[in-house]
Image 1 (cartoon, rainbow, N blue to C red):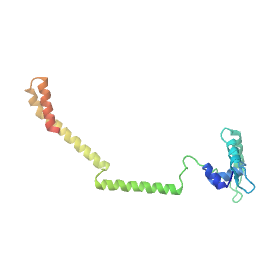
Image 2 (cartoon, one colour):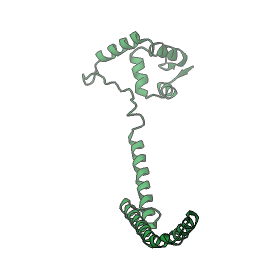
Image 3 (tube, helix red, strand yellow):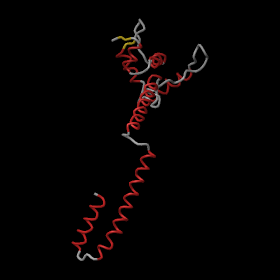
Image 4 (tube, one colour):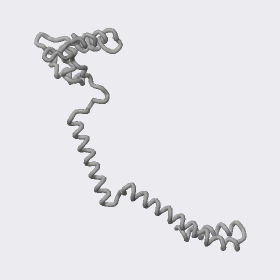
Length: 169
């Protein structure tokens, strides 16, 4: 099967420039019309990478020595890294739009009252804690004189249970 370099790049999931570099390094088998012979090229590429460190190093050394004819500057290794995959302009703009929309949703939820700011939340938690503390102190103050006159564990538990229910429930 024969394909253009662009189709071959799409098949491999790489940039067209990577396929061009494969050709410069002698890792492509080209038909007379300049198109890529797919099966032979895939075999050659697979044979010259990975476990064949000596061949990969040789290709790397040859690549380093090449000069760009137009500028006289050595070619840069344009291989994709984990950090740069998918970080093109369109992707970054889409991410900015997505996070902008999420911020708008959060602002709308704050206005509706379905979520609170951190400061408001901490204020409400503090108020709740204070009111529970005051309720417990009042319960202790009210129960202490009553429990002195109640005899028996069962009767005391019943008295405490009624007082807690009336205070907090």
